[in-house]
Length: 220
Figure (cartoon, one colour):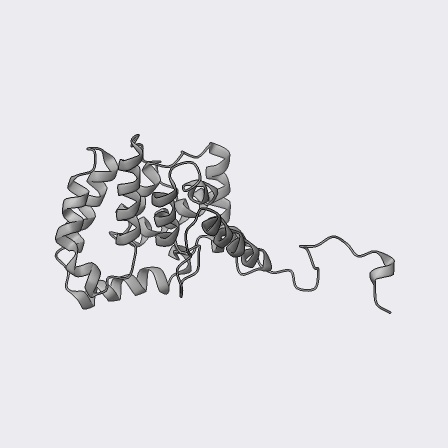
């Protein structure tokens, strides 16, 4: 996987950042009838963003999104996000893989939402990228965007995988990553290593997530 140059943009006003994050949240959701019916409103909301790379990327995406019929759009979404692990929208997978650490990360994220006064959505994991972006829009740049910053490497993996697959959804990730902090060379190298090795795997039987047992705690 060849990493892409980092997009660069400045969206300073909190209300503009919130509007952008809400749009990213909506556009990365499954294209059901409600979302498709809202395409004119989505175009208007994107047109109201400050001029710059994020707005241009979302405008370009909506040119594609606005001209597609429901069935091809739904098929492309499922093939892109549900059938390819390299572009899954569940962020903790990239950091923890399918391990017990991931379960703890999901619980921590859900608790973070509740502390901010938000109710985690029913029927969806809290690390689903549209949910994380909606939280960021509601809670503001400091608290709200913290999970996005924490999972910056995973976002870069998704963005690169979408570009490699030729999916227009890469433009939505371009818009999102453009307003997040850039990555150092060391972080970019870590992303490249993760792309090659994949997420962590569970080390069954080694109990790596707790302190070692004392002799008195070991059952005979």
